Length: 365
Picture: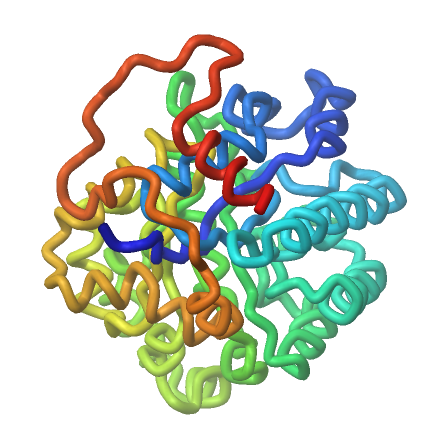
């Protein structure tokens, strides 16, 4: 049985300091609020999920509702505390975890300071951003207000993971329909459009973006993206001198909670295989092994699946390739390459899972 090999670029962690911050906000906590997946997250559960799904490494990030809840000082403190908690996870298990560091946006100056601290001191693998921010009105990432931030990320050739959130204009629009169902994909599309149509993607070409959920609704709107980019030739030549598709096809896209032949097929008709990455969105969804099964059912060949599972991410995160040879941990469960996991009874409270027992024995040596 092959050793765990997948690299999960969309995997959340929830340090206690973040749980405490959301609990303190109470009813003022923005959507999606203090949900059960956040409350129930633990390092042990995350590792069990990774072992079960054959995930060798996960790059962790703070999920929505994000870091900034209206107080710049509190956001600076929370971002620093979350980043240091993530860095400790990486230091304890460098072959298992990487970190996309959080920023206290929309505070630009504080975010520039946190970029320096996270990348230079904590050695984070990249930076995590959200698709939009409230700063005197809604601002997407291509807004000129973010130019100093993008300039610094471009100078550093940073890897930037862009996670969706609910735009303040459009949260809780329909009772019983969570923002994650429609608005997250829509907000991802809005921020991609702002970067490309506004020219920021071309002005800062060295930022290596990862957009979540197969690029949101962008693949379905591709005719409009392309057609409208050609209406004002002078403006579009200035904003995207190499053309719309040049920008869209150099971004990267994960398949977290988008593993359906329809959405994956639409993405693949536009985006090269080399830009498509494995992601789970843990602790959301139905577990990491379920995501593995769904991706395998999307029409990839074995060689293509190997690229999505690992080698595409290795180009962005080469340090996991150098650690791979030292990864001596035996596979703990079935790889679930095609077949879903067989349901089994949950262990009694206090009884460690097989993965936990194996990991404890390995990490004590």
